[in-house]
Length: 110
Image 1 (cartoon, rainbow, N blue to C red):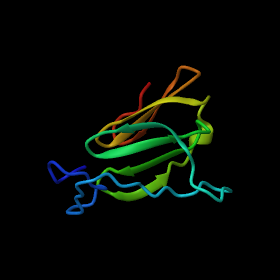
Image 2: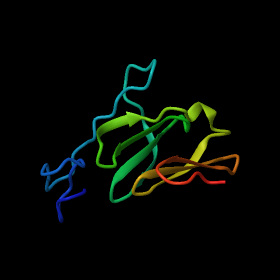
Image 3: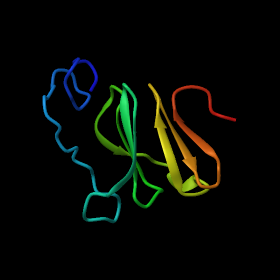
């Protein structure tokens, strides 16, 4: 986790833990239970989780979102997400159509 060396934490300052703990995930729209996660990626600033429908994405951290948030706009993707990466202030998603989608700060990929 960020800010406390040698300990795990949720991204909030000073909530360090010496043992792993589950991250409470929100249910997606229309679902009664939290989603299952298929792909995880993390940076020193945040985490991205691709759900097992390979279209829905949760993200948290990035010194702003302490609880997982649903990424909006993934319905525009041209295929299923097959890989994800997290940078300091952005997410990258690779689809099975071979395209890369960028979300966050910085210049868009072209």
